[in-house]
Each structure stands twice: as C-alpha cells, then as structure tokens.
Image (spheres, rainbow, N blue to C red):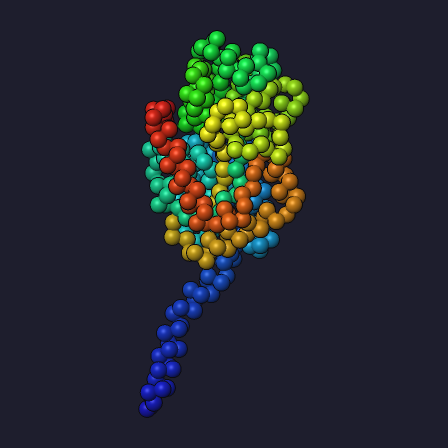
Length: 329
C-alpha cells in the first residue's frame, strides 16, 4: 500500500497518541475509589478533630469517601512513616501537624525525610495555646504569676506532653524569658494534663483553647496568656504574649495535608481544592473557631505556601530544640 507523506504523518501521529490515552484516562478518573486520610494520633485530640472535619468536607468535591484511619504511636511517626512509603497515587494522605512535620525530625531518628518524602497539599488551620494555671494560684495575671514563680524556684510544676512537645518547648522558652525555674512534668496528652491542673495536682500547663477554655470559663482554672500575635476571637479576654511582656512567644499547633513524594501535580491540585472548599461552609468554620482554630487566608492554603511555612517553622524551632538538648527518651 502506498501512503502519501501527509497520510504517513497523520498515521504516525495517531499511533503516537495511543500510549498516552490510558494515562490520560487514569488521571481524569481520579479519584475512582475511597481515599484514606491517616491521622497519626489516637482519636479525640486536635489532629483527629480537624482530620475528621476536613475528611467529611472533602467528600462532595471529590465524589468519594475520605476514610479517617488513626495510626498512633511514636509521637506521630508511625502513621506518618506509613504514608511516606505509600504509593504516590493520591489514595493515601496524611494529616500532618507541627510535631510530625517539624519537631520530630529534630528529636527522633526517623526512617523518612519530612521534606523530601512528602508533597505539601494544603495548610488547614492552626491553634495557638494558652497558659492555664490552677484556680488557687496566688496570682491574677502573668506579672503576679512571674513574681510568685521567682519566689518559689523549682517548686512549681508545669505539665507537658513529653519531650519536644509544644508545652515542653513553651515551658523552656517561658523560663528563659522570665528568668524562672519550673519543674516540667510529662503527660500522655493535653487532656490529662489539663485535668490535673483543674484538680490542683500540678500548677499549670500550656494547652490548646479547645481543651482549656471551658474549664477557664467555669472558674476551675485561670488563663494568663495566649501564644499568638492577636487575641483570639473566641477568648478575647486573654491577652497576647506581646501584651504581657513576653515578645515573640508565639506558637500555633498547625495542621496540614501531605501526600507521598511523586504524587502527580494534578492530583495534588484536586486534593487542595477539595480541602479548601471545606472551609466555605460557615458551619464548618464556626465549629473549628469554637475549638480555638484559626483558618488561614486563602493565599496561605496553597501547596507552595505550606512548603514555605514548614521551612520557616523548621528554621525557627530546630535550633531551639537542639539548644535545649531535647532527644527521644
């Protein structure tokens, strides 16, 4: 059979297009089955709360169920490591928080790299912390509290959630800025630590608003400062660190979505759009605000913005962690 040059070129073009067709169809079909969102902590904590809210909110946009799987242990490293080793196909994602994607790499010997083994998807929300103290504390504001601490060095106990946890680091920074000495007591979670503050078993703890605010409002504890640049919309009566003379004592326990390295950009964009759409629902926003979460501005919810934020947090906190000599126990 004789082909004209024009006919040959057309036939070659058609043949070249065939191998690409299945790949295009697969990309367009995503997601074709349920997606697993690994929350690397036990149910009930802040990570679990935000994970379940976002998983439900992503479902309408994706057209598939997002199943939350709690994989606790190793300060979040077990579940996070599992996602690092998962196929980069968009069907296994992780709810990463400050601990898992900043602090853990400076404290533990991990079997994965928190930067090079993940692709950022979206910053979801962050939650500043407050300093809550037992109601019988002989102080009514932070200034009086510091005076009391200086008069009782090494006698006052502050609850943490283990080495390198946000309350632990804030406890270290607080002592450095105020010239005080506290006894740091490790707990298995923020809830038990707060319960012991209410019971008067320990003197205080740095804790998220969602865990502490009801106790403060009921008069079962006092709150002296919030670790944020601005006062909280749900607790405007609590002063910021700058206002009470602790400049720069900022900390937010942020939560974000990550996927394994190599996940196609088109899938990352779909997941990002689905996550961001969650916050368009006023009821969802209100639920998170009541838990003390702050929802970032839209330009801070892009994959690129999350990558930059994580990098800045690592540059800020790793030197502090290493200077304090914090290592896994």
